[in-house]
Image (tube, rainbow, N blue to C red; front, top):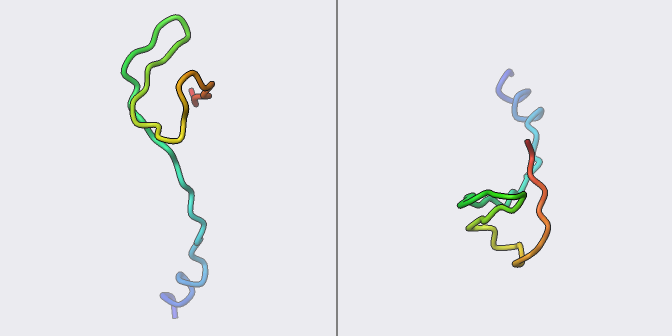
Length: 48
């Protein structure tokens, strides 16, 4: 049964991502709103 095969192959991995909104960028500094798990002044690395 094709449905049973698809269910067995389903990847159950869960990826949690903390997202925010970039408000301002300048001189290598970004002001971001919504990153609840980040403290003020903390170094954060962005994907390109």
